[in-house]
Image: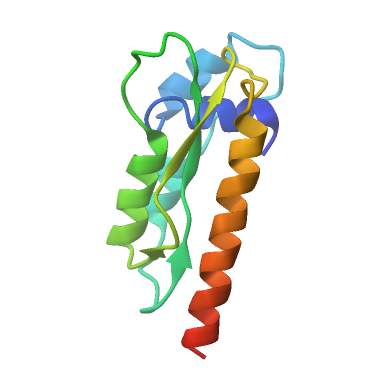
Length: 128
């Protein structure tokens, strides 16, 4: 996915085609509007026991009072499909509709990814 499509897809809650189409009209960046994570997960088949996943989203930093988390919504859908989550769903803040990541967010992304890598390494070491 291109940066614009990721930001559109994960804005506040799991988007619908209509909201992606509306958001695509607000940027010159290429945006995928046909299928999003909501539709992809709704069409996915259940997975074998022990399958693991992680969920993250981007969220506009301002105004800070905006509720919602696409990451939590994706995490719930992943659990319903039978995935164990490797970590808590995480929101990363962006400045405006098309980004970039907010101040300090890249460091948060790296730290989250490193925690996931360690958790998965430990999980594999104890379940092989």
